[in-house]
Length: 105
Image: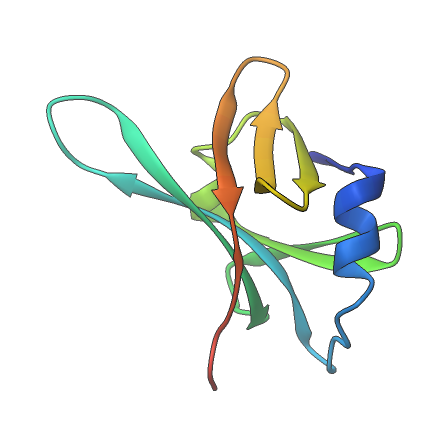
């Protein structure tokens, strides 16, 4: 998987102080229905056994193997102060107006 964090998103993510075994999670959750749909979430979270860890510009990025099934091989993350985060690929925009949530231990 290739993850591109654009300058606006990189500046925002560098504000976080990631603890040991913690990272920025990109999550795609499949929603079962008569159509194929996935919800996307951004979180500060602990690393889990099924996660792959990507170091992108000094940011520890976590993406579970299950989430990777619902994302393209190459994804991008951007940030606009008035629109929040935007998760996309060359093929589609997954979601925009995303906010980062903190997962409690």
